[in-house]
Length: 290
Image 1 (cartoon, rainbow, N blue to C red):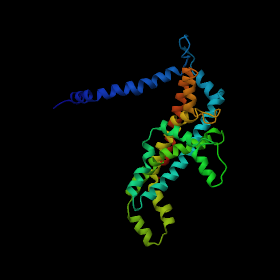
Image 2: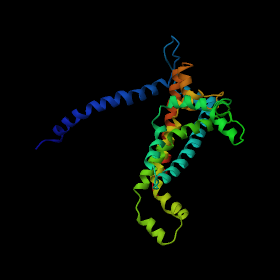
Image 3: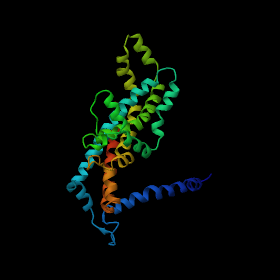
């Protein structure tokens, strides 16, 4: 009879390339970022990195008001985008769950934004949101609504960016919810029909509670992505006007690659990672059944 040690050796030989790859791609960058976050180092300087301990973290949390503004913008953008995407995604899933002519074609067209390149789409949306020549303000003028400044105003920039993100990622929530709708049991709906429940009661008392795990998964995945959104914000505003749309990702990028303060940017990255981890844990608790 072979010993467990001799059995494990061939298995370890098979998985060792994957382990080495994970160590190089995941573990090493994480450890290096943690190391750099304790250093005072400017990329453009000839002075070597200097160990400063937790100085960068203390300055970020207690002194840097720009970090606080970026944190507020990050959560506000996530809240707006996630609310719009979840609401529209669930409604669209209910629509596509019903039979109508051309449903397959419409559903295919609906998921196209999710497969497009974010940078290219951002450039198109910038043209659409131009205050004087943009097509969005033209449509507003047709219904006698005053033109908006969209991403060119500090008051509306986060909402405008959330609209672009919603246009791109609502199909993601729709697909997950639609998969949940197709797997729901039919017995509760038949019983509700026998009991005389109307559509409104059936949706809020049966459909929505049964869909909760699927919606929770979609919300968790999208909330993490919204917190990390970088491409459309950087292409459309670069954090402007002023710092009105500067999220933590943009703030970290500007600190590291515009101001070349690598140690400080690494500390921001670590704090950002902890924030995303905490948010994910909190959302996972809501996913558990009561």
